[in-house]
Image (cartoon, rainbow, N blue to C red; front, side, top):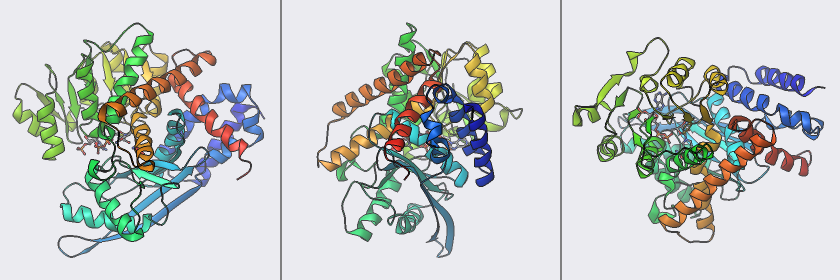
Amino acid sequence: MPANQKVKEVLEYIKECSPGQDEFYQASEEVLHSLLPLLKEDNRYLEHNVLERIMVPERSIIFRVNWVDDAGKVQTNVGYRVQFNSAIGPYKGGLRFHPSVNLGIVKFLGFEQIFKNALTGLQIGGAKGGSNFDPKGKSDNEVMHFCQAFMSELYKHIGEQRDVPAGDIGVGAREIGYLFGQYKKLTGNFQGVLTGKGLNWGGSNARKEATGYGSVYFAENFLNVYEKSLKDKRCTVSGSGNVAIYTMEKLYNFGATPISCSDSKGTIYHESGIEMASLKAVKEINHESLEAYATLHPEAVYTPVSHYPEDGHAVWHIACDVAFPSATQNELTLLDAQVLEKNGCILINEGANMPTTADALSYIRKSSMLFSPGKAANAGGVATSQLEMSQNASMAQWSFEEVDIKLRTIMQNIFKTAYDTSVEFDCEGDLVTGANIAGFRKVADSMIDQGSV
Ligand code: NDP
Ligand code: 2IT
């Protein structure tokens, strides 16, 4: 059967057996279509039915999480852990706590994680998990009770050689601490079963900064190929969480100016550059909306989200040289991509997972703009998580500089792998194809080596 016919059949099958999972279809379509040049060249993947096998998670665990709120009432949420693929190592991937979390979201994130983790060159399989629990507006006590209840089920399925969760949207150091405490209480084991831990109890230096820093290292590598650099570039960044904040911090180190950030309520445009101490105070310490940043800096422009109801996001309407979508999936639409191009943007570098909609992505790939796919550009976070696992296994703690140097090298290698693969398949600079083929090939070859398990 011709490869394109096979891809079509597998995608139809996926829709039939996993109804209502739009984000998972979107990620699957992008990956499978971009594999066509490889599938046409090497028949082994179809012979061994690798496409059918790789699209179905090895295991999906869905569980009830009951916890008691501050008023003494029992609340219920749904918990997930999708252990997608363990061909190249123990399952690895974050946990997301956000009201929008459902099985389709967790599956799209877990599927992307398989190829991202393979691209790091490290031995980690792909997984993702989370809950529709919303940490916003909850007291520390409620967040702790939720995390304890969540771990009371999850602990049965994870382990340092088996599955090592970490943070993602809504899961940071506080949540990892409560989850780790409960794991230790239930099992009696102090082991590196989670990453993103506190520095006093097994965490790695530079893990907090790693995704944002790595995203900037990746962008610089890409621009250098075309004899350009981030120096003096005006950069728009979306989001104001972990990835966005450390993207902005590293942009300043490279002589670029981050001029925007956003959250679920609105966008800040600060022409002279985002002031990092104020942003960290508003978002990391006080957990306020960005409106508080505008109060501190009256010269900054604050636009509430409803300003562009006709399908577009204020942040992408600000003229920039490089755009760093770093908030959430499908936050950059076709209209946004057209406006970015018109305003002279030269590179869109994905810090978030799948922030670009499918039609925006196909437009961008035909445009003159460069594009860094998230599974390559944001892989610095999970790569540094693996460095944390490595330090835990040897009971060592490396300095910030040591970890940062390793992160820089890993990002350089990820870029080179994706870029060289694009050259190998005659689409120089098309890193969507390059990253998908390089990640897939490593995992698929390992699956073939390991037989029909
Ligand atoms: P955080 O929870 O720290 O921050 C998320 C940010 O995005 C916040 O500013 C939040 O706004 C905004 N946001 C979230 N959901 C929405 C939404 N539905 N609409 C509008 N804004 C939204 O998460 P991270 O920074 O860790 O994650 C950001 C992205 O990066 C995600 O796609 C994640 O999967 C990806 N990623 C994260 C890694 C990590 O190491 N943390 C590694 C690789 C990728 P508000 O403050 O109002 O909630
Ligand atoms: O999407 C991601 O790569 C993450 N949220 C980080 C995963 C990890 O295991 O550090």
